[in-house]
Length: 153
Image (cartoon, rainbow, N blue to C red; front, top):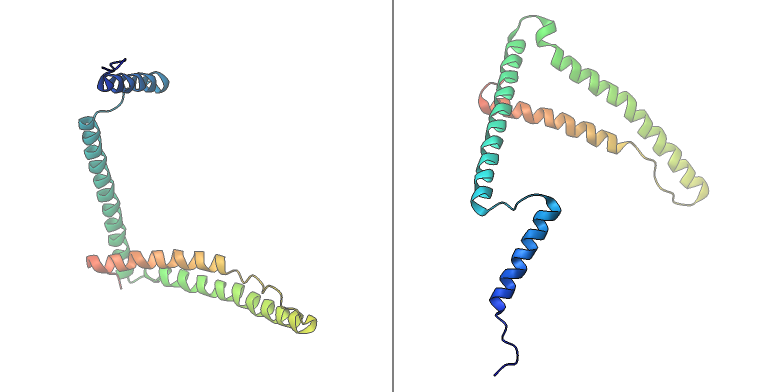
């Protein structure tokens, strides 16, 4: 016969209730039951779906505007996108190519003169990758337009 007869199930239930009361006292919030959590998850999913539908409708509206602009016979409406692309490409070329060429030439002269291999110059690749990513992102929208069949060119 044991000296102490402890009901472990009752002790564990009491500890669980105490922890729940402590949590409520500390946070000031009652815990959410599984049914309520499932309802909230469904509502969040519905809101995310509505947000996605709204974003898609904006993209479709922009694609329609782009289609109308590109179909215009006026140069200022249909030619601005290629013009901006060429201006940006030329600006990048005149900014980064000389910097890269001069940097590498000076670095090579330094290495040859000193006989010590040093760290090569920063050619601004981080900036170029960021710009390229932005351009490809815009290109991704173009692919999306083509997939929808609203291609403007």
